[in-house]
Image 1 (cartoon, rainbow, N blue to C red):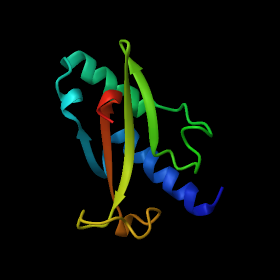
Image 2: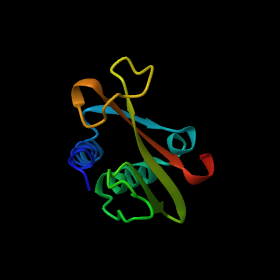
Image 3: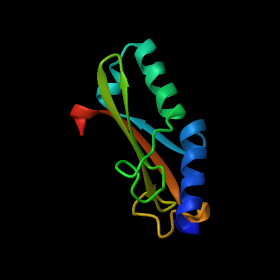
Image 4: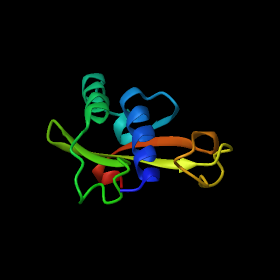
Length: 109
């Protein structure tokens, strides 16, 4: 594991756990959930810790899958340049990176 991956992981975990420091986007399938299901999903994304070599091969904590009431959901963190028009040149550097966390139903992937 590199120092860069460690810093990306730290930044991703902080953002995912708090939803502060980036953009959180939900798909139409998530937006259509009942309030109680949507709140349960958001809590599950924030609390997610089931990282392993299959879902986190680069040890950056940028993807996860959770089940809520029999439905599977994915979440993914992507890295953008400050203008949100292109990819970040260095996801370990918050000065040049804006994070976007997308939460979706698995069938919307």
